[in-house]
Length: 236
Image 1 (spheres, rainbow, N blue to C red):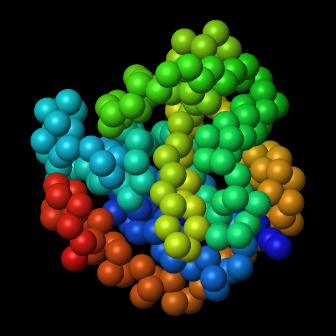
Image 2 (spheres, rainbow, N blue to C red):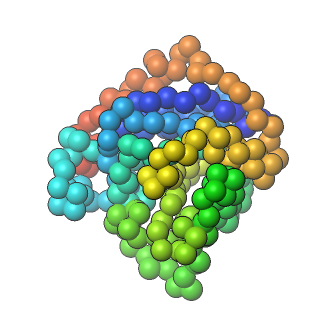
C-alpha cells in the first residue's frame, strides 16, 4: 500500500480539525495511511475531546470562542509556531494493528531521530509503572510515558492524541520547537516520513487535495466552529 502525503495548509482551528476528521472519513477511498503537516492562521488553543470546557476557560483565561475542541483526546495545546501534523491509519494497516502505546512511542522515536539530524538532542519519557489515569490537563506541562522530551528529560517537545473509529485511527500531534526558531520544519517532516513509512511498510506517494475536498469537509468546519461542539461536544 501507499502512505499518501498531502500538501501543507495554514488554516483556522476549526478548519484544521475538520480536515483531520475528513481524512479519517476518507480511508476507504484512499486505501492507505494519510499524512499532512499543517499550520495556523493565528495563535490558537486546542483542547481534548474529554476535557471540561469550564475548566479550560479558567485554566487558560481565554474565551471558548477563541479555542477549538479536538476530536481526539489529550490536554491543552497552544499552537502558532509549533509543527503540527495529522496521520490517519486505515483499518487493517500495520499501524492501526499495533498496540496504541507501542505506536505512540514509535511515532515519537521517529520524530526524535528527525530532530537529531537537525542538531536537537532528545529522549523518550519513560513509562510509569502505574498509570495516573484521569483526563489530561495542560499537555506540555504534564508529560506522559513515551512523549518526546529534551535531552535531559525536563522539557516536553512532542505529544499526540489518538482517536479510533470503524474507519481507522486518527493521530493528531504537535512538536513544540519554539527554542529553535530557525529549524527547517519541511526537512524534519521529510525525514520523519521516510522513517515512519519504513515502519509501516508503505511507499510514500505525494498527492494533492481532491477537487471535492472543500465541499466534503464543509459540514465538519461548521461543527468544529460551533460553540455547541466547543462547550458540550454536540455535533451540528
